[in-house]
Length: 313
Ligand code: NAD
Ligand code: UDP
Image (cartoon, rainbow, N blue to C red; front, side):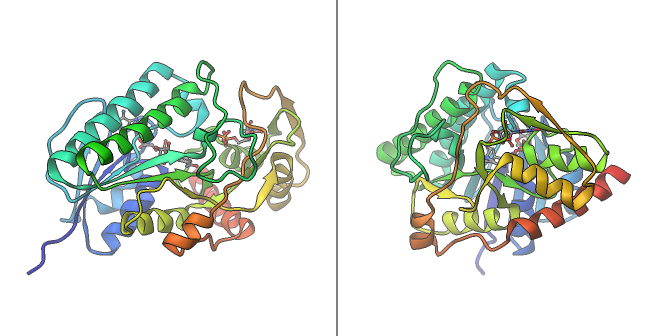
């Protein structure tokens, strides 16, 4: 009899991690969710509590841990600028020590290892759209550096483990992803605009609102992560939606779906906030046969429905 696949998902109580757990458990695989619940919630994984294939461990990835697994999906790290800037030294420790500890564990077990990296490794990009071979324009000493430079050293660690120990690593560069289970106080733009609109408040636009982002619906992103983990590719591979929007267009679209009477409040653009971002996903198309399927309208409707329920509870 073949043994069940055992997965370790760090950051599994968070937004992306909990959706990944759903997919793996629905396939009948085993899952250990490891999380310190900084920005994650037990609520996100509550429905699996009694499933014999599921186990939750409250643990901080800055500390080593010994477990027996086949695949490590390393997602633990706050992703919203509001949360990763709350304690930037802790964020750097989470990313560096967390990735170091999990790579060490993967190496001991000869487990496959996937890093949730980010489009932030491109910084405020001068090349548009961003292909994987663009090396980025990152401020090493600014407010976003703990996260941006953190993810860059995390990628470096992955490739050094591959070169020195022949570890089977995979690096996904994730572009802005949204969907149900973002926290209402997450601070990222889609959840902010939806919660503000549902609560009848003005929408907060940072800067002129002419800066751009490209938004991927969570289900699409999770499919990409699974395809990458099961491929023979190490990456880095961009995963994201290629439809680019100005932030002010997103604000207009969301308020038109919820309450067109609302107005905008303009606030200063945060330091080093990238002015443009859009992935080149040719590698993901070629090597993973992956591209996003859910369009922004549909994704926003599903996310708005989630927050309607969330705010009524
Ligand atoms: P999230 O904040 O919802 O989830 C992060 C999870 O990690 C939370 O459950 C949190 O409690 C946990 N965590 C944080 N620090 C920890 C620590 N020291 N030890 C153990 N657990 C810890 O964020 P998300 O959007 O789900 O992002 C998940 C991963 O994907 C992150 O690594 C992030 O950098 C990456 N990513 C996300 C996006 C996006 O748009 N969602 C974009 C690029 C990269
Ligand atoms: N943003 C905004 N209003 C908000 C939250 C964010 O205008 O209430 C802007 C932010 O300045 C950035 C973009 O929206 O230009 C995306 O921000 P988010 O924090 O979601 O992600 P990131 O900047 O990490 O891509």
